[in-house]
Length: 320
Image 1 (cartoon, rainbow, N blue to C red):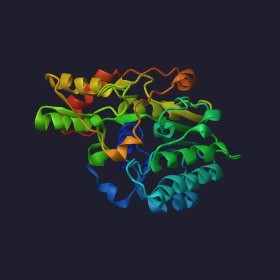
Image 2: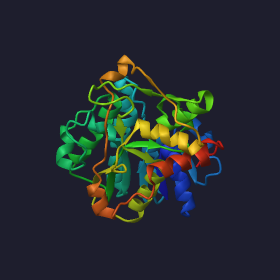
Image 3: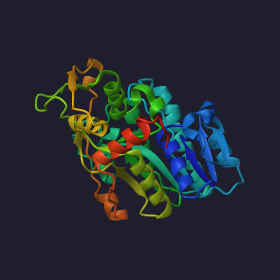
Image 4: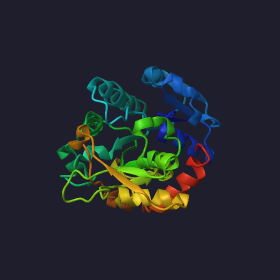
């Protein structure tokens, strides 16, 4: 049996769907109790749904044959500043889960985040000796950084473990994330409602408005890669998972308009003060380590991914 945490959320529910398409129905889903009834899980097949609050104890005590854990669940709100929430949901939960996997000899893949790279001063390399030097910009990012550093200090490990630093993920099943949904999701809705998209003006005199760049990665590429790492064991460690190519928000906006068959219409707005110091103007994954390990190559071009999301999901209100 395979455990997927965060199964009622964005990436987790897509992962459940992908594992189903690959023939896996022997899934144990973990998340908040009320997320069992989220639309993202409609039609998906699994054995059991477990409330996250009792999951670590359940896993420790169960006699069931758990063959793998994919730990996606986390509080991901970058605008949340209550560190106690992150301590409970992101740090302590992951540490307990890790310790059980060590004790019961269960392989685990867990989600880290590119938010740990902060303003990019130290680059975007995923080599382990560079990770302790990183300086995240908000409590969410720090919670992921603390876990990464803690894991690298351990002397006991599961038989196989992978940490994945997700870059800017977008795609179907993020509809419930509200303000934390991707710019593509919000941009699509702005365009449908007003005929234009609003982007932040630059907060850096060296960067033109809308030319802030991120490594945007489609959720389908995320789940396909996780499945590859589940099926094909590589050297345990922490790896970046992005595309390796940064795209500007202007390119993103033009991509949505192109997918909709409309003329580009961008309006720039002032960046809120509370974002100024924590805003990442550039991210781009160094993908050399993962490429070497699994001959990683993205089949999803940026425009193809945007078009698939817009035309096959957003325009028809469909879940993955």
